[in-house]
Amino acid sequence: MTIEINKLGFAYPEAGFDLKLDHLVLADRLTAFIGQNGAGKSTLLKLLSGLLDLQEGQVTVDGEDLGQYLAQDRIKKVGYTFQDPNDQIFNATVAKEVAWGLKKLGLPEAAIKDQTDQALKAVGLEGSQEKNPYDLSLSEKKLLTIATVLAIDPEIYLFDEPMMSLDYPSRQRVTRIFKQLEARGRQLIVITHDMDWLASQCERVNVMNHGRLIFSGAVSDLFAQPDLVEKIGVLPPRVYSLSQMLGIDPPFLSLEQAEDR
Amino acid sequence: MASRQIALKNLSVQYLGFEDWVLKEITVFAPVGAKIGLVGPSKGGRSTLLNLFAGIIPKIIPAKIKGKVTLGDNDYRDLAPELRKTTGVVLQDSASQLSGLADSVYDELAFALVNRGLDPLTIQDRVAAVASQFDLEDYLEQAPTALSGGQMQRLAIASALALNPQFLLLDDPTSQMDPVGRQHFFSWLKQQKDQTVFIASGEVDDLAEVCDQIWVLEAGRLAASGTPQAVFNQLKDDPLVAKPTSLELAKRLKIKRPDGSYPVTASELKEAAGK
Image (tube, rainbow over all chains, first blue to last red; front, side, top):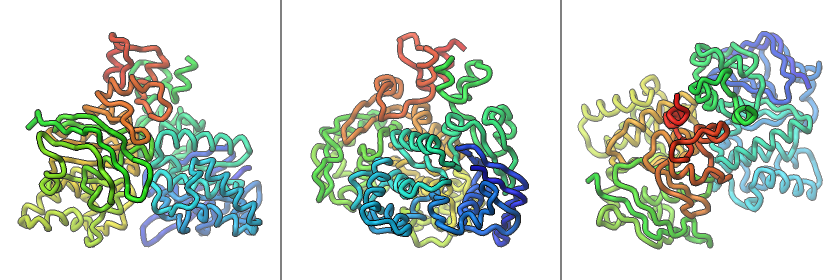
């Protein structure tokens, strides 16, 4: 799928914030956005999900206007997980939280149960069906929000900081899930602060700063510009800095690259 | 003072109403003044251990406790009322530990100090010091609830430090910080001396640089304990535990230290590579 953004404008005047994107095409299976808090990344994801309405410009999905595209069966088209899972979770049990969207789709009970169980199993929360989500750890809450979109399996997945607060085995698990989604032809748009993850998973990256897109290109080109990296308040991937320290040129972006050497 | 030890002897904890023991016969020691990194998967027992040290278990969360925790020659529980005054705690979900009574970040930072009856000038000085330490100066007039996740974590840490605690208990304190915020925090932690710090975190690169000891908890058991060097080398193939990037890179580039172990910090890697 190709998402094309043209002359997009959105402002929160009371907060003195405006987001402007002249032109951007998102055609990769996995697209990443990075940048400091308040850069406009989450606002952009909310606009793409239809949670916020565009004030100016146009977004198209495979040539169709976003509003048209989302007009029918919206939750089958775009799934969105919040940065803070506490902002998203509202049902009394883990199973009900996952089943909520499936019920909206009007699926039969047996299919709802089946898809709920499968999604919870995929994130490693099988056996937690009857727990109150508020009794889960932060890591588990985050996994629960990922399960809610997996259960519906929309065409486009929007993840706001999916790796945040996850423990090591869960990070590996979610990374595997992402690869499976990509292989199945789903489109993933991810906001991340985790440069190690970014560099190991994405070829290209989009950088937002104060409501503007200031870089869109190869991950290796971004980290080759130390001034830009500093300006946007991130750190190079650890493996990049360490291999640079060892005099390896160009520095590794992932441990896999070190393996292939 | 520096030679006193914190000792856990056959420590087991079971939450009331639950069958499983969440900590199982943990025996381990650390000198007072050490920085101890708690590592391992979610539900491994790290938060339980921190909640026990903080007195939240069994006071607020009832639990059955077997075995012993001692500080020097004393049972930890006998010292608890005294220790609580010198212990700073940062919970995993830092928003949940706000006083709920402060209208501004300034008042939140001053909250415990006011409760201790300190004089206004001292309060002002301490608040200014911790606010500057954790980059909160621009937010002092804001409502705590308006902060981002990372700012909230910085506020929780600064509030805990306002009382100059001897013991710091930190449960994943940087999980919501951006990379630069995380780097500032660990640089600050590295400089701290004479404070006993227990920190649960997934940031194993930073823990390897900062901590004197690493304790690894998996399914309630102590899977390993010792220096970062020893522990991460011992667990280098454990799929449940993240390893420092220095070790992972050294493994792939076949760089070892003279004793045959892998480096776990940047400086060890540099030295082992002869750079």
